[in-house]
Length: 242
Image (cartoon, rainbow, N blue to C red; front, top):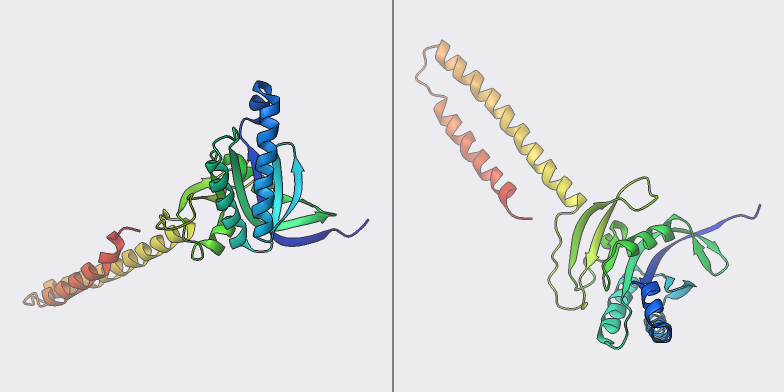
């Protein structure tokens, strides 16, 4: 058996919405719109140093050596297609960074499948990206991202973190809801604070007991006030917005 060639690459999957319905309504117009849209994809994929690996029906699979270029390409394609009002086709796009198998010019494997699943979950005219892609582009593109939560792609055993990409590609402030890493960091901070508070509460309880049994003058109130102030100051960041 021939050895399987693999590589890590960025996969862009695109597909037209309601293509069959549009073909049924007007075959000639829909075919012209599909050809025009493919021309747009080819132009921007080449501009961003990618290549088309597969075109099946109304969809396509492309790969890019750069994650940033792939997402920028998707943004510019959607912008261009949205500006062409004469086209009756709207496309969904999914982008994923993953390991793929190489078969000639074609790409196969789970990495390609996940990009296709992200595409199928996107809104018409929208772009969805995986966590792997988001980690690479979040600080490199001036475009909004929104965390959509954990999604369960069809025929995948595990759920994946999904982000949507804002249209336009320029000037939008980043608006990312707390993603998995951000939620874990927030949870860790709360856990450390609770553990610290519990330890001090136990210490103060012992001091109060000693003070009461020895008939002291409640000298422990002063360290108690100091500890309360310290915990109040440390708890402040826990209530800030993400």
